[in-house]
Length: 340
Image (cartoon, rainbow, N blue to C red):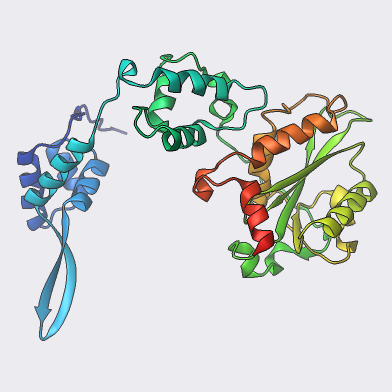
């Protein structure tokens, strides 16, 4: 079967004023963005973003009824482009604050790292508003280009991300309690405080190995964690019951592991179980476990881990400013929610 391969080279440069005029003319002829992209030798996404950038809301009177629609204007798009270019600044390394990079390296390479690159950038900008510093995205680009003493290995998330694949659909008919499908919408949309997700972090998969149990509050992302001598259901039930009596825990969402089979017997708390092989239904806890894995790598025995070390790791994560919470910490929001 014959195949047609395009050898057309796309231009990796900004759109010109004349190209914007052509886009306007093509749109008036009724051409679609994909067709305009082929005619101009540009990527379809470039044309779509350009049309959105230069769109102006118009109003039309049809038989006394006002109809609103958007129309693309080349001169408007060119004006927006020129204004954006005035705000665009290419930060060379020699123009940035050297103190910033020194402190960033120290923060990132700390034994118990509290900051992410983004949270450090935000905090430093707040404390030093007059200094010239690059954006978070620029810093990551510098790291990948080996222009900083910070390496990707210093930021575990940069080297641990990989494409997930499914080996096939598995069926598990265990019913440990109320399904996550019965969970109220107030829990699903995080509008209510006091709802948690639970999971275990395993070390070596050998007999006699300790485990770490984590419990994360869905709204604030505040986490609790403790080291357990084993993952027996009785051990887990006892610790969780103690937490329920000490902390504002209204509900807990768990997976279908047999270690959580006795959670339904807890008093004073609703327990919901996610669908089998559906870790995304407990995404809050899974994300926290990923952060904790920075300090507790996979395959490493947890027996030598001390309660003091685990407490340090937990505190570092709970006190990390997060963009999700407008750079407030999970600990701050958790304490604030309890006083509300």
